[in-house]
Image 1 (cartoon, one colour):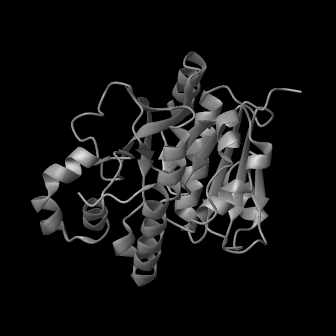
Image 2 (cartoon, one colour):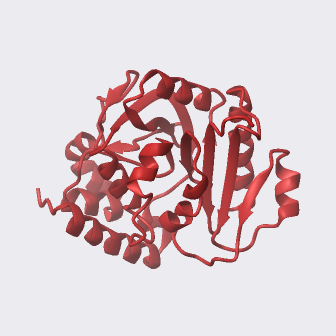
Image 3 (cartoon, helix red, strand yellow):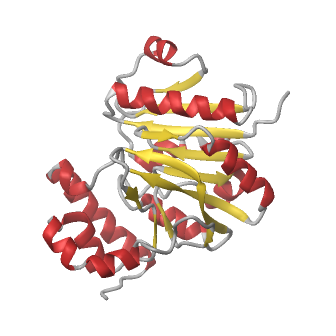
Length: 266
């Protein structure tokens, strides 16, 4: 029986099917480029929206996908936790709106094989328009979080210097960088045993900051690395652009995060 080298979990709720299809196809192409097979790499799709059809998945990709439904909308982190019982040597937490560049998985696994002290990889990311998206960040303060989540563009431009510092602008570019405190949950490639020791995501976070919490905890038992050869395109947007429900979820999760890890006002 081949080693289960990589497992992948994807949690979706209301992702447009064309976006999800692009994610699945780019993922399977990257798995094949890394010389993985369905016997050595397994994909688990957690459908919190209970709307996907097995027939649609079969039409979208020939790679077998383990579809989980019927549990309701339990949140992003708890959804991914459903896949941890079968985590492989490495486990990828992936958003349903991410295009994975062809060589990304091969580069990431090679890096993890070469650096056994690395427990988590965060990639180099772009928006669909080709703008750099910063997935690795410093520990935030309350003002920075408010600016990032809710400020209009003109106000963000006024505070650009402090936001750039928080997002490692000009620092994390073409070289590997070790130990950024926080990593985005849209693409988190863990060493499987590290993720198991962490117990996965804290289920108290329904949406937002569950990734910040997990990466911060990861840094206490292992190392995180920004690896620019691992590249993705992320379609995600900010909480404020998604309406009042997301704004409220963002505020609640921010309060939980700061209560757990410490408030910083400046």
